[in-house]
Length: 333
Image: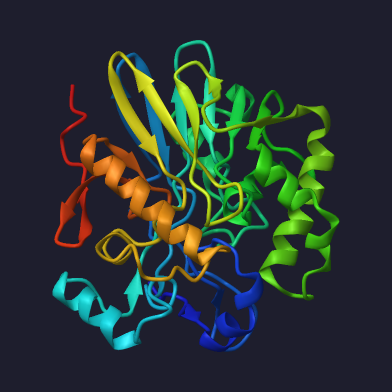
């Protein structure tokens, strides 16, 4: 089957640097408008697991090969250095398949979705992206089953799926967002970003979204539970109010860290490397160091939104950095 070639434009990356957002890449064809390669039929749509008394379903919202991880990770390093790390890790030096992995948490009473994927307005267009409703259906859920959507942050690959044709995609759900994050994107100054920039795209989508949601939008602070067993954790830098979430049940814990990593090798091996889509580079570095150290020290299972699907793993210290250990059978009953 022919595959559309997807290219990360370095020129577009540089011109968008002042307003970059947290998508895994800026996708475009060599000629023509942005378009992602179609997902392969064998790409899984969901992965079930059990945490204490909770049923969790990791959902694949997009599947696409893109250029990178440089400069998405390591923009401040020579391209050759990042590519050498990939080769040493037995990975293609200049291509990768990021995950886009919301997670559904079902406690038998309340069904909570963390992040809403790309939808029709995200960074990965359909059919390769915006597959969240399809993934939910495969796992036996419908949009009307969702009671709460908790957002790590308001970039378009995390909030794009909140709307469907301009109306709330999850008709019975409230939406929780961090207090700092909401204030940042609600500020009219965001709508003064350069035309065509990623910041403006995200700000416009956020404005449409909160208008459509009306009084369904709730704000949360770090340390606050969004629902029983799911509490917010400040993980700022990627965006000003970026949140992670602790999920706990039956003495077991899971860390949902949002966009604290854009690549499971490069981001963890060198948390000090600059991340192109971090809006505050220095804070992003500090957050990665803190979050990775916590995950390693406390031996927490992790759901990383952009690590390779099913985006589940563990973190260990390795040298001056860290190593991602993909989940294998740790959640087997």
